[in-house]
Length: 189
Image (cartoon, rainbow, N blue to C red; front, side):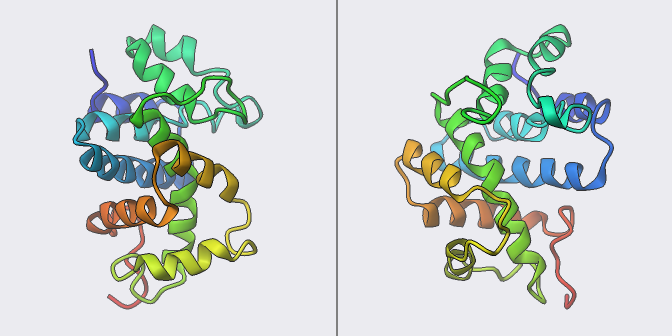
């Protein structure tokens, strides 16, 4: 049975309590919903995968994704959904290569949303008026949000056959309606 958002939130809440990790889960969830729309796929399903992707990170940051497969399968999460989650760590902490558009999208937006969030936090109106060209200036500045792996993002975009600016625009626009939920309204509403 395909993962639902409610089930993803239920599973995640049993493991993830740190506020910044919950916000990150939401960022990725909304970006994945937008990517699903772009590819004409099941929005809720992709959002659920996005929300659950860092299931074991809080408890096992140094062993990320090593405590995901067995636990999620035992909770009844579909094998394909678990594989999608594992694939976001490809080349970092997983040897599961992203193959589907969902997997490639998750691999890409996980890091990409970190730069989007950092960019939006610096703006008076947060993400609500963030434009792709402003984002791309920050993306090209390697000192900005330096912990976000730009090479990984570029690699993910190449897998998708898309430009970074295209994926960024989809994600930014997909996150904007949820600005309040992801705490990116800015200081001047």
